[in-house]
Amino acid sequence: MAADALAQVLSGSAAERVLDRTLRSHRSLSREQRQALAESVFNVGLWRRRLGFLLGNPSAPASSLLYAFLHRLAGLPATEAARLSGVGSPPTLVSEEPPSLALRWSLPDWLAEHFIRELGPAAEDFCAHLNVPGPITLRVNRLRTTREALAERLRSEGVETRPGALSPLALHVVGPRPNLYGLGSLREGLFEVQDEGSQLLGLLVEARPGETVLDLCAGAGGKTLLLGAAMENRGRLLAYDPDAERLDRLLQRCSRAGVSNAQVLRAPPEGVLADRVLADVPCSELGSLRRGPDLRFRLEPESLSRWPRVQHDILERAGRLVRPGGRLVYATCTFNRGENEDVVRGFLREAPGFRLVTPGAGWLEPSCVREGVLFCAPHLHGTDGFFAAVLERVDG
Image (cartoon, rainbow, N blue to C red):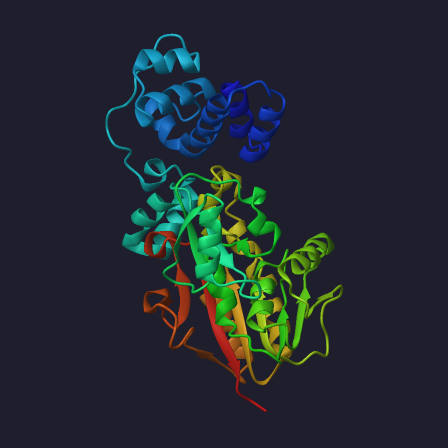
């Protein structure tokens, strides 16, 4: 069963979807069997390149990769790993360490080379952290409760948490992964699931009650909800996204969270002058690779050059919507200077009325600031990877 599911993942199907289909068609599996299947599919899907190196065969079949995982990485005896994976006699595995970053941390060659260019000596540590699942992080909804009260409520529901170190709104779940969607506290809108780095992007807007605030790439609205809570439901909160279905979900989430000042825009905003604009733009999403075991293998090198033109156009449009004295936050969830610093520099050359300001002055952890912009990473902060530039319009 695992080998069949793995064959689909290795041929390019999304691991989560394959696992979901497999579990749905084998409902008689015990809880332990379901967990073992998930661990096998996700780990072999993730470590496929290192496992292929251990086998001396980059194109090894799924059953052999499963054997290498069970024996070398999970530590099962060779005979037991061979029986469970169905390979017959145990294959011989290479004993030496993989010679390249790509093979050590199971990445496509082009992607490993990109991270070396971007991060230099830190690339090894960064890539190691990409292979460790990210924490489950919650954002307290201050329209409903406080962080301390939420932690106590979650404890009464059997979920232990600890405060985040970077965001004053963050709680990290401690211990086994709970069924958050079965909790009354979630149904009551007391919290949202949101990475701590993602919370920082919304906090950098520093939205205030009574202002006009625009979330230009709202998606399903996680940051929109954060902005609404910061505004205490006073002022105008505008949210636009080209995906109408995501905006529909945003409206549902606003209702649950008690955000009453949000207005969904079904067409790109024109003629608006906002006090604050958040442009969390579409990107290559390299900062969230640890959230999916096979995401790195479904990317193409072209993803690094696909977005800068789009991002530049969005940032240019966002700049026209900021009032004099207002703030614009440009953000991505990727590690690629071509999508981050280069886009911001190009915008500042064309829009001299804007200036770059230090993000989170007075409250943001200094280690999150690099060369005047926000830079968060799993190996440094335990968050997903995020970039943000805070720009203020200074002309009249």
